[in-house]
Each structure stands twice: as structure tokens, then as C-alpha cells.
Image 1 (cartoon, rainbow, N blue to C red):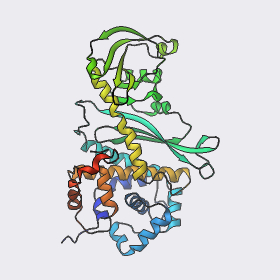
Image 2: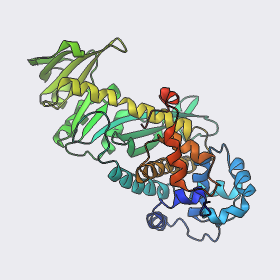
Image 3: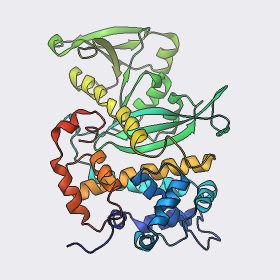
Image 4: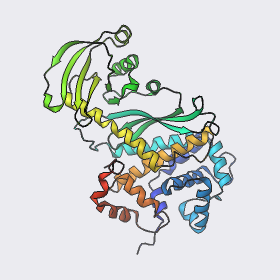
Length: 388
């Protein structure tokens, strides 16, 4: 019989505490704090993420009902709804952002050889944004429309393991394409984007950085074909052309050659146009790369449904960003555990198991290994197969 640590404590053993404390010291998170440190705050919020708590009162009630176990969970401060609310409001959200990026680096190293369905040596990123609607009277700082508030979650997803490598939280008014100015472009990597990011000046900067992009083209694109490549129409590829842009502004912003691929998606009965600066990969591979962009859409769907970011525990800018970054760090921490324990189960399945076992004294590796025999009939839902 296992008589060791709680499941929650075993999860936190994979958390790099020295990196967390460095983040706290960098922003003086514990300055003049005698009780309920930043670590206590993080652990309470991580508990809320893992167990799907709906409010601060919910967190307080659940943790106080297990008062005798709080010390073993690593929580040293007195858990109070008002104390947690104040911590989320005033403690710098960058503490948790820096820590999340530390976890992301560790996760990416673990998923470096992960297969995402296409045999490609280069790193492939999917870039997109999602809008989280808010109440304007409660979140007046999150400007979006005249009678509506929202925040945008801009995410760059590494398709090897579906690890978010860049996240920017803005108000709803920031246009998606502006986030390209904040990206540190990785030479040799592929960036997959939809039409909302079609800005030839910014794409040309990406080309000068020796990175590759695959992006949807608009129907009114002015393009002069210079060469047509042979294609197999049975694969859905209609044409594969090299040429230049002929629009006055687009040609001046992107003066070099581009590749245009027209592809018919039989599943959606829709014809798509792709633009790329890569001239070596087969046209079908380019189309498959764009199809992989759907993973970032599923990531947004999954994180909204399974992590507590749709209903926020606080209303200030700092509280919202703190909650989002802690949610992301918990997500990445579970991804690290999945890889270290060599589990084949999806992150959805692992989180479901953790949500009902955090107070149990059971071997983490054993209880998660038992989930690998999940009934395959349950895997029909896209939400469940997201991280398989």
C-alpha cells in the first residue's frame, strides 16, 4: 500500500522551484509579505486549475475543508478568499509569466522529437489569437467595442507537442497582424497563419530573417505567374506556381518571388490558396502544414473548456493576466509530467484523473499509467484527441 505524498505534492515535484523563486525575486513578489507568499498564491491557483474551481469562495471552501492536508500540499499561509483576491490584484503578473516561459523551455526540450504527422526536421509554429468576451461594466480596462469588453490571447504554438512558446495578452481592439511585430523570428522555422496575418511588409521581414511562412491568400490577390510546377491533381492540388506580386503596395512591400498553391479540400468542399516563401517542399506538404494549423484552434477550445480562464477570479488587468499565466503554466507542467512518465494518454485524460485524485495518497505514475487503457470509443470527440 502506498503511504507517500499526496497526488498534488507529487505533481509539484516536477515544478522547478529555484526558477520560481528567481522569478519572485526578480519582481520583488514577497516584499513585505509575512504570510501567504507568492508560492502559496501559485499553489492555490494551481489547485483551482486542476480541480476546476469556479470562484474564490469555491477555492477557499475546498481548501479549508482539507485543512490538515494543506501543509503537505506545500501551502503554508492561511487560505482566505480576500487574501487570494488581493494577491491576484497586486502581485506582478510577470512573476508567473516568467515562470511559465521557464516551463515552456523545459517542455520544448522534452518534445523535441515528437511526431506531429509530417516528416519535417524544422520547427513548425501555428500562430493565431482567440477572443475571451468580458463584461464592460466589470472589466472597463479591456476595451473592445462600444458596449463590449474582451481580452485577446495571441498564441504561437509549437506543433511538436502543442506547446505554446509565445503568448501575449492584449485588449480586444489589438488587430491580430500587429503581434507579428513582437515575435522573435526563428531562422529556418515554419510559421503557419491564416488570412488575418496577411501583411506583406511584415512577411518580407520574416523572409529576410530566413524563416518560412505558409499563409492563406485572399481572393483579390494580384499575382503574376512566372512558372508552373507539375502537380498531381488526384491529391487535391490544383496548381503550384511561382511568381511575383503585381499590386502597387504589395509589390513594393514584398519585391521577391512567392509561391502560390491552389488546393481543393474535399472534406470541406472548399478551394484554398496558400502563399509561401518555401520553394522546395512538395505542394501537398504545404497544404498538410496548413491543415496542422487547426491544432492551435483546438488548443484554444481545449484551454477554454478545461482551464479556468473563461470565468475570472478577479476583475483587474493584473488579476486576469495572473490567472491566464498560471493556467498556462499548469498546462505545460502536466505536459512535462506526461513526457517524463512516458504516458500515451492525452492531457485531457490526465487532467481529468488529477482533478479527482489531488488529495489521495497514491503513486502518481501508477494512477496515470492506469489511464492508458482508456476505452477507444471515448476518443471520437475532437476535444479528447487533441493531444494524442
